[in-house]
Length: 100
Image (cartoon, one colour):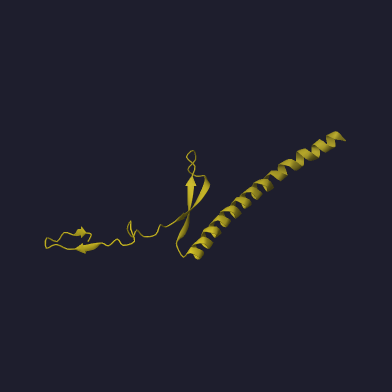
């Protein structure tokens, strides 16, 4: 009886391993899709571009384990709300930047 049970286990276990690997791959794909969807939703809500940076592992460049959401910073408008910049072109043809 015990030997029959061991024989059944020995036959069944190798057949379960591919299913486990396929399930892990499917879950990883779902996690990435969810992360991309989250970035898309945030971009739609904020009206600003949002992307996903895929960080490769140092030990193996073909593997990535870390995803980060990235946003474009707003355009630089100066250090103070009343900052003004003026551009003038001198007669020499070079450009000069002056702030009034």
